[in-house]
Amino acid sequence: MESMLNKVCYIMNFYLADRRRSEKEFKDDKLYFVKKQVEILEKRKHNLTKIIFNFNIEKEHYHYLSEVYKIVPKLIQGAEIEINIRENKGISYGAWSDLFLKYKDKYDYYIFNEDDYMFIEHNWDNYLVNKFNSYNDCGYLCMLVREPLDWCDWRKNAGNSVGISSSEVLMRIVNRFGKLPHHELSEEYDDAVEGQHRFSFSFLQLGYNIYDVRDDYAVLGSWESPDWYTPKCEVWKHHDWNEKYLCVSSRYFGASGASYYICTNQEMCKEHRLSTHAEAMNCYKNKINYYNLEYCKQENEKYGI
Image (cartoon, rainbow, N blue to C red; front, side, top):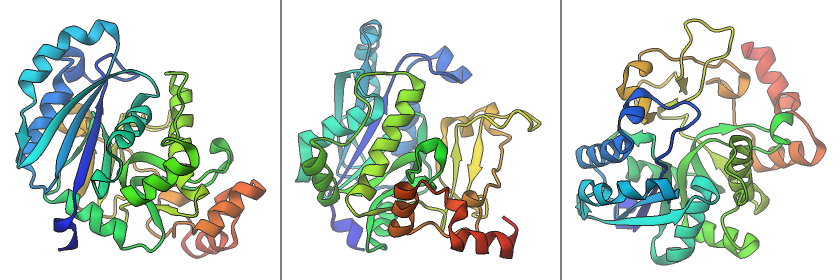
């Protein structure tokens, strides 16, 4: 397979402080995600060239680092392991940007992830490379695409931004913006969301489109169910028409992953076709919600979505 010949760098970002919704396992052990990622990487087959465990560190976290170096091995299935320590600036997107700028075209593809999401399918890296290359205009392949809507300033974006791009595409992003775009000055959640939008929309600004894995796999995300939904849960299942999961929230392994919410918004339905680059940019430039595009109106009329 083509992907077996490529050099793939896998970057994971870890943060050792509490989050908005910390699960019990992490509250009890701040190195839980580190241990779980190592466990999964050792059990699931992959052909990665390099794996970077990046830690966005606050000063009160430094005492964890000696244990981190004990937990993380030097090699996993032949992949070289690097531990990188940086100040918590720009959250995950800032880390991804810094590390890509460090290595640039040394690797053919970069897979970006956060500490609380795990790939659980064997040879998941080969799948991502091949799926990315199956599109002639793919800039970024993520776990979940969100279509243009007013709440995100009509920017098509990666709603779950775990994903893959090529060094060729990423270098074009860097040449345009000087970095992989993100929100540098704040660690507030709303600003982090803005950083996520800047990161993924930058691919469309350069003429690429973004896609997700809906054709082949389901994904579990760490999102709270709507207030009206019972029973209350903290996991959403995306692309639920697929039997197998590619990537799951860490809640999949705990009690909170036993129940999940399935969103039936048009953009998250099987019958929906993701917008083309031209359609997405038309929404952005003219402040059009995607469901007002003609083809989406036809989808709604045909399928009732």
